[in-house]
Image (cartoon, rainbow, N blue to C red; front, side, top):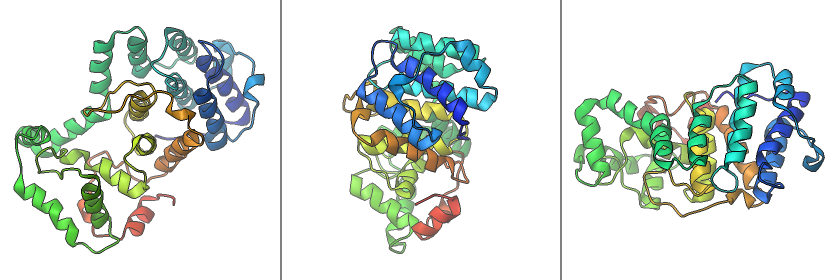
Length: 318
Protein backbone atom coordinates (compact mmCIF):
# COMPACT_ATOMS: atom_id res chain seq x y z
CA UNK A 1 0.00 0.00 0.00
CA UNK A 2 1.39 3.34 -0.99
CA UNK A 3 0.33 5.18 2.16
CA UNK A 4 -0.32 8.86 1.47
CA UNK A 5 -0.33 11.68 4.02
CA UNK A 6 -2.89 14.38 3.19
CA UNK A 7 -2.43 18.09 3.75
CA UNK A 8 -3.90 19.62 6.94
CA UNK A 9 -6.94 20.88 5.01
CA UNK A 10 -7.48 17.52 3.35
CA UNK A 11 -7.05 15.76 6.68
CA UNK A 12 -9.80 17.84 8.27
CA UNK A 13 -12.17 17.18 5.37
CA UNK A 14 -11.45 13.46 5.54
CA UNK A 15 -12.02 13.35 9.29
CA UNK A 16 -15.38 15.03 8.89
CA UNK A 17 -16.40 12.38 6.36
CA UNK A 18 -15.12 9.44 8.42
CA UNK A 19 -16.88 10.82 11.48
CA UNK A 20 -20.14 10.89 9.49
CA UNK A 21 -19.70 7.22 8.59
CA UNK A 22 -18.85 6.27 12.17
CA UNK A 23 -21.83 8.18 13.58
CA UNK A 24 -24.41 7.10 10.99
CA UNK A 25 -26.25 5.06 13.65
CA UNK A 26 -25.72 7.41 16.60
CA UNK A 27 -22.96 9.08 18.64
CA UNK A 28 -19.35 7.97 18.20
CA UNK A 29 -18.59 4.76 20.08
CA UNK A 30 -15.40 4.31 22.07
CA UNK A 31 -13.88 2.08 19.37
CA UNK A 32 -14.69 4.51 16.55
CA UNK A 33 -13.40 7.45 18.56
CA UNK A 34 -10.17 5.59 19.31
CA UNK A 35 -9.66 4.83 15.62
CA UNK A 36 -10.28 8.40 14.46
CA UNK A 37 -7.98 9.79 17.14
CA UNK A 38 -5.30 7.26 16.23
CA UNK A 39 -5.63 8.24 12.56
CA UNK A 40 -4.90 11.82 13.59
CA UNK A 41 -1.81 10.81 15.56
CA UNK A 42 -0.36 8.19 13.23
CA UNK A 43 -1.27 9.29 9.69
CA UNK A 44 -2.91 12.72 9.53
CA UNK A 45 -0.72 14.48 12.13
CA UNK A 46 -3.58 16.68 13.28
CA UNK A 47 -5.31 17.25 16.62
CA UNK A 48 -8.91 18.22 15.91
CA UNK A 49 -11.70 18.01 18.47
CA UNK A 50 -13.84 15.25 16.94
CA UNK A 51 -16.99 16.47 18.62
CA UNK A 52 -16.56 19.93 17.09
CA UNK A 53 -16.18 18.67 13.52
CA UNK A 54 -19.25 19.57 11.43
CA UNK A 55 -20.89 17.25 8.88
CA UNK A 56 -19.73 17.41 5.29
CA UNK A 57 -21.54 16.89 2.00
CA UNK A 58 -20.05 14.46 -0.55
CA UNK A 59 -19.54 17.25 -3.09
CA UNK A 60 -17.57 19.35 -0.59
CA UNK A 61 -15.33 16.39 0.20
CA UNK A 62 -14.74 15.73 -3.50
CA UNK A 63 -13.87 19.37 -4.15
CA UNK A 64 -11.14 19.20 -1.51
CA UNK A 65 -9.65 15.86 -2.61
CA UNK A 66 -8.10 16.04 -6.07
CA UNK A 67 -5.48 13.28 -5.95
CA UNK A 68 -6.92 9.90 -7.09
CA UNK A 69 -4.71 8.01 -4.64
CA UNK A 70 -5.93 10.08 -1.70
CA UNK A 71 -9.51 9.66 -2.86
CA UNK A 72 -9.16 5.88 -2.85
CA UNK A 73 -7.39 5.98 0.52
CA UNK A 74 -10.11 8.00 2.23
CA UNK A 75 -12.75 5.56 0.96
CA UNK A 76 -10.67 2.68 2.33
CA UNK A 77 -10.50 4.50 5.66
CA UNK A 78 -14.27 4.84 5.72
CA UNK A 79 -14.65 1.09 5.20
CA UNK A 80 -12.36 0.37 8.14
CA UNK A 81 -14.30 2.82 10.31
CA UNK A 82 -17.56 1.09 9.38
CA UNK A 83 -16.34 -2.12 11.06
CA UNK A 84 -15.32 -0.80 14.48
CA UNK A 85 -18.37 -2.09 16.37
CA UNK A 86 -19.70 -5.10 14.53
CA UNK A 87 -21.02 -5.77 11.03
CA UNK A 88 -21.53 -2.59 8.99
CA UNK A 89 -25.03 -1.16 9.07
CA UNK A 90 -26.91 -0.17 5.90
CA UNK A 91 -26.74 3.46 7.07
CA UNK A 92 -22.95 3.40 7.36
CA UNK A 93 -22.45 1.76 3.98
CA UNK A 94 -24.91 4.16 2.36
CA UNK A 95 -22.76 7.05 3.56
CA UNK A 96 -19.62 5.37 2.26
CA UNK A 97 -21.30 4.83 -1.09
CA UNK A 98 -22.35 8.48 -1.30
CA UNK A 99 -18.83 9.72 -0.61
CA UNK A 100 -17.27 7.14 -2.96
CA UNK A 101 -19.59 8.17 -5.79
CA UNK A 102 -18.76 11.86 -5.35
CA UNK A 103 -15.04 11.01 -5.29
CA UNK A 104 -15.42 8.87 -8.44
CA UNK A 105 -13.95 5.87 -6.58
CA UNK A 106 -15.29 2.50 -7.64
CA UNK A 107 -14.33 -0.07 -5.05
CA UNK A 108 -15.23 -3.77 -5.05
CA UNK A 109 -14.64 -3.67 -1.29
CA UNK A 110 -17.50 -1.18 -0.94
CA UNK A 111 -19.70 -3.52 -2.96
CA UNK A 112 -18.72 -6.47 -0.75
CA UNK A 113 -19.49 -4.65 2.50
CA UNK A 114 -22.80 -3.54 0.99
CA UNK A 115 -23.67 -7.23 0.55
CA UNK A 116 -22.73 -7.86 4.18
CA UNK A 117 -24.81 -4.91 5.38
CA UNK A 118 -27.77 -6.27 3.40
CA UNK A 119 -27.18 -9.69 5.03
CA UNK A 120 -26.45 -11.34 1.69
CA UNK A 121 -23.87 -13.31 3.61
CA UNK A 122 -23.09 -16.09 1.15
CA UNK A 123 -22.53 -13.70 -1.76
CA UNK A 124 -20.41 -11.51 0.50
CA UNK A 125 -18.19 -14.39 1.58
CA UNK A 126 -17.76 -15.79 -1.93
CA UNK A 127 -16.76 -12.47 -3.44
CA UNK A 128 -14.65 -11.32 -0.50
CA UNK A 129 -12.64 -14.54 -0.40
CA UNK A 130 -12.03 -14.63 -4.16
CA UNK A 131 -10.61 -11.10 -4.05
CA UNK A 132 -8.61 -11.42 -0.83
CA UNK A 133 -5.10 -12.50 0.07
CA UNK A 134 -6.02 -16.16 0.61
CA UNK A 135 -7.07 -16.39 -3.04
CA UNK A 136 -3.80 -14.63 -3.96
CA UNK A 137 -1.89 -17.24 -1.97
CA UNK A 138 -3.63 -20.16 -3.68
CA UNK A 139 -3.05 -18.57 -7.08
CA UNK A 140 0.65 -18.16 -6.35
CA UNK A 141 0.88 -21.73 -5.09
CA UNK A 142 -0.47 -22.87 -8.45
CA UNK A 143 1.90 -20.59 -10.38
CA UNK A 144 4.91 -21.81 -8.38
CA UNK A 145 4.18 -25.54 -8.15
CA UNK A 146 1.59 -26.31 -10.81
CA UNK A 147 -1.65 -28.22 -10.41
CA UNK A 148 -0.11 -31.27 -8.73
CA UNK A 149 1.82 -29.18 -6.23
CA UNK A 150 -1.30 -27.15 -5.41
CA UNK A 151 -3.39 -30.26 -4.85
CA UNK A 152 -0.69 -31.73 -2.59
CA UNK A 153 -0.53 -28.47 -0.60
CA UNK A 154 -4.29 -28.39 -0.09
CA UNK A 155 -4.42 -32.04 0.90
CA UNK A 156 -1.63 -31.37 3.38
CA UNK A 157 -3.55 -28.42 4.82
CA UNK A 158 -6.53 -30.73 5.34
CA UNK A 159 -4.26 -33.25 7.08
CA UNK A 160 -4.68 -35.87 4.34
CA UNK A 161 -1.12 -35.88 2.99
CA UNK A 162 2.44 -35.28 4.15
CA UNK A 163 5.44 -34.19 2.06
CA UNK A 164 8.40 -35.44 4.08
CA UNK A 165 11.02 -33.89 1.81
CA UNK A 166 9.47 -30.43 2.08
CA UNK A 167 8.95 -30.76 5.83
CA UNK A 168 12.59 -31.83 6.28
CA UNK A 169 13.73 -28.61 4.62
CA UNK A 170 11.91 -26.62 7.31
CA UNK A 171 13.07 -28.92 10.12
CA UNK A 172 16.66 -28.17 9.04
CA UNK A 173 16.15 -24.49 9.97
CA UNK A 174 16.81 -25.52 13.56
CA UNK A 175 20.45 -25.89 12.59
CA UNK A 176 20.83 -22.26 11.52
CA UNK A 177 22.67 -19.89 13.89
CA UNK A 178 20.83 -18.43 16.85
CA UNK A 179 19.56 -14.97 15.91
CA UNK A 180 19.11 -15.77 12.22
CA UNK A 181 15.82 -15.21 10.41
CA UNK A 182 15.47 -18.92 9.66
CA UNK A 183 16.09 -19.99 13.25
CA UNK A 184 13.53 -17.44 14.41
CA UNK A 185 11.04 -18.82 11.87
CA UNK A 186 11.65 -22.34 13.21
CA UNK A 187 11.04 -21.10 16.77
CA UNK A 188 7.86 -19.31 15.62
CA UNK A 189 6.40 -22.56 14.27
CA UNK A 190 7.48 -24.71 17.18
CA UNK A 191 6.62 -22.16 19.86
CA UNK A 192 3.09 -21.70 18.56
CA UNK A 193 2.49 -25.37 17.84
CA UNK A 194 2.06 -24.75 14.11
CA UNK A 195 2.66 -27.51 11.56
CA UNK A 196 5.44 -26.84 9.06
CA UNK A 197 4.72 -26.82 5.34
CA UNK A 198 4.94 -30.45 4.25
CA UNK A 199 3.60 -31.74 7.58
CA UNK A 200 -0.02 -32.73 7.94
CA UNK A 201 -2.12 -29.58 8.51
CA UNK A 202 0.82 -27.41 7.41
CA UNK A 203 0.01 -24.29 5.41
CA UNK A 204 0.99 -24.12 1.70
CA UNK A 205 4.42 -22.63 1.11
CA UNK A 206 2.89 -19.63 -0.67
CA UNK A 207 1.54 -18.57 2.73
CA UNK A 208 4.85 -18.76 4.63
CA UNK A 209 5.34 -15.03 4.07
CA UNK A 210 2.62 -14.47 6.70
CA UNK A 211 4.67 -16.28 9.34
CA UNK A 212 7.81 -14.47 8.24
CA UNK A 213 5.91 -11.21 8.62
CA UNK A 214 5.21 -12.18 12.24
CA UNK A 215 8.90 -12.92 12.82
CA UNK A 216 10.16 -9.77 11.10
CA UNK A 217 7.63 -7.43 12.70
CA UNK A 218 7.58 -8.95 16.19
CA UNK A 219 3.76 -8.99 16.33
CA UNK A 220 2.15 -11.93 18.13
CA UNK A 221 -0.44 -14.48 17.06
CA UNK A 222 -3.21 -13.53 19.52
CA UNK A 223 -6.10 -11.36 18.23
CA UNK A 224 -4.21 -8.16 19.12
CA UNK A 225 -1.13 -9.38 17.26
CA UNK A 226 -3.15 -10.58 14.27
CA UNK A 227 -4.84 -7.19 14.01
CA UNK A 228 -1.40 -5.60 13.85
CA UNK A 229 -0.01 -8.16 11.40
CA UNK A 230 -3.01 -7.62 9.12
CA UNK A 231 -2.25 -3.91 9.05
CA UNK A 232 1.46 -4.62 8.56
CA UNK A 233 0.81 -6.94 5.60
CA UNK A 234 -1.65 -4.44 4.10
CA UNK A 235 1.13 -1.89 4.35
CA UNK A 236 3.58 -3.81 2.16
CA UNK A 237 1.06 -5.53 -0.13
CA UNK A 238 0.74 -3.93 -3.56
CA UNK A 239 -2.33 -5.75 -4.89
CA UNK A 240 -5.68 -5.21 -3.13
CA UNK A 241 -4.16 -4.30 0.26
CA UNK A 242 -7.51 -3.08 1.63
CA UNK A 243 -8.78 -6.66 1.65
CA UNK A 244 -6.08 -7.71 4.12
CA UNK A 245 -6.99 -4.88 6.49
CA UNK A 246 -10.70 -5.61 6.16
CA UNK A 247 -9.95 -9.31 6.73
CA UNK A 248 -8.65 -8.71 10.25
CA UNK A 249 -11.19 -5.97 11.01
CA UNK A 250 -14.04 -8.28 10.04
CA UNK A 251 -12.63 -11.16 12.10
CA UNK A 252 -11.45 -9.35 15.23
CA UNK A 253 -13.61 -6.21 15.32
CA UNK A 254 -16.86 -6.95 13.49
CA UNK A 255 -17.34 -10.54 14.67
CA UNK A 256 -17.38 -11.97 11.12
CA UNK A 257 -14.88 -14.81 10.78
CA UNK A 258 -13.54 -14.85 7.22
CA UNK A 259 -10.46 -16.95 8.08
CA UNK A 260 -10.20 -20.67 7.20
CA UNK A 261 -9.84 -21.51 10.92
CA UNK A 262 -12.09 -21.15 13.99
CA UNK A 263 -11.69 -17.78 15.72
CA UNK A 264 -13.14 -16.29 18.91
CA UNK A 265 -16.19 -14.13 18.25
CA UNK A 266 -15.03 -10.56 18.88
CA UNK A 267 -16.47 -7.11 18.32
CA UNK A 268 -15.19 -3.68 19.26
CA UNK A 269 -11.59 -4.76 19.87
CA UNK A 270 -10.46 -1.19 19.19
CA UNK A 271 -12.07 -0.14 22.46
CA UNK A 272 -8.78 -1.36 23.95
CA UNK A 273 -6.77 1.78 24.79
CA UNK A 274 -3.84 2.30 22.45
CA UNK A 275 -4.65 -0.60 20.12
CA UNK A 276 -5.86 1.58 17.25
CA UNK A 277 -2.56 3.47 17.41
CA UNK A 278 -0.63 0.20 17.32
CA UNK A 279 -2.65 -1.03 14.34
CA UNK A 280 -2.08 2.14 12.29
CA UNK A 281 1.59 2.27 13.31
CA UNK A 282 1.89 -1.28 11.95
CA UNK A 283 0.30 -0.13 8.69
CA UNK A 284 2.89 2.66 8.45
CA UNK A 285 5.75 0.22 9.19
CA UNK A 286 4.58 -2.19 6.54
CA UNK A 287 4.27 0.55 3.93
CA UNK A 288 7.99 1.31 4.34
CA UNK A 289 9.16 -2.16 3.26
CA UNK A 290 11.14 -2.29 0.03
CA UNK A 291 9.54 -5.59 -1.05
CA UNK A 292 6.04 -7.00 -1.24
CA UNK A 293 6.66 -10.19 0.74
CA UNK A 294 3.38 -11.68 -0.51
CA UNK A 295 4.33 -11.47 -4.20
CA UNK A 296 6.39 -14.58 -5.07
CA UNK A 297 9.10 -13.62 -2.54
CA UNK A 298 11.93 -16.17 -2.58
CA UNK A 299 12.68 -16.06 1.13
CA UNK A 300 15.10 -19.02 1.29
CA UNK A 301 18.24 -16.94 0.56
CA UNK A 302 17.17 -14.61 3.38
CA UNK A 303 16.81 -17.26 6.08
CA UNK A 304 20.53 -17.59 6.99
CA UNK A 305 20.78 -13.81 7.50
CA UNK A 306 20.83 -12.35 11.01
CA UNK A 307 17.31 -11.21 11.81
CA UNK A 308 18.39 -7.58 12.29
CA UNK A 309 20.21 -7.64 8.95
CA UNK A 310 17.12 -8.99 7.17
CA UNK A 311 15.04 -6.23 8.71
CA UNK A 312 17.58 -3.61 7.64
CA UNK A 313 17.65 -4.83 4.04
CA UNK A 314 13.85 -4.75 3.90
CA UNK A 315 13.75 -1.20 5.26
CA UNK A 316 11.83 -2.31 8.34
CA UNK A 317 11.85 0.22 11.17
CA UNK A 318 12.53 -0.96 14.71
